[in-house]
Image (cartoon, rainbow, N blue to C red; front, side, top):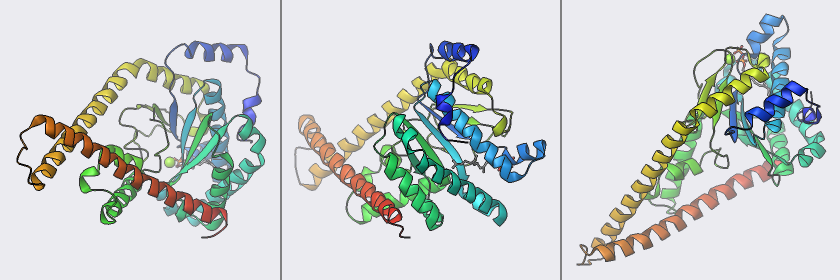
Length: 335
Ligand code: FPP
Ligand code: MG
């Protein structure tokens, strides 16, 4: 099945009415999916595991269509976790073959990708794959990087704990290289080092197959998301399941929003406190006797905060450059 072929489908009257009604409420801007239950679906339908995963891909294409019709601009899918490398060689090879086929197909769908303005990004440690996948990833990213109407983030060789650990390694290196100070490490700096740094906040997370856990997917990013656990295998997910998740998001929207705003407020307050404290230390170190002068302290804190932002920005720009250089190497077909 094509990735975006569905986008040109004609809708039935009832389906179209449902889209209109649901769009009258607050709509999520970013939906993440854990596509679980492909193998159990295969067993139930008496088909091979490969056919089960292929049916899983077809469902992903259908979910992208629903999101397109519902004006949901961003989708993140959990296609392959680092843990999945531990499955049998035969199954890992089957999945990798599906990725190779589907990524090659994406390149052939260039016209549609451009027509609908789809930007495709990959989140995860892509270096764990072979060169063929790395090259396909770089080709797809390069081809779609200027599109900005809708975003598909494919999580491959991803786990949240690995993402957090690599972000911590990056900030430690930044401190060691003298780009940032230890006190510059904040929640938002760490978040900016994630593979998902360009993604919008996740509004809804859907997991199929009846399992009620996150399996190391977007653990940090879903603190203020509506979590929906659906008792159906991924290929059996229906439009009604999907609409149920959106309704759940609409009902819970205000309380999620309040919790998110409160947390943002807390972080900006703690940033202010930290800048003030560092300004105080600077004044003392400079032997300034007037450390009790509040006006002076505020002025120094303001200056300190400007310099901190410059350090953090430079550090993040370097990280972005490093990641781009990596992609260019893969694009050229280098390991
Ligand atoms: C989980 O079901 C599914 C996966 C590990 C693979 C998901 C991948 C796809 C649907 C293909 C997507 C392709 C691209 C290119 C994005 P499971 O294997 O854990 O099944 P089970 O829970 O029944 O054992
Ligand atoms: Mg599973």
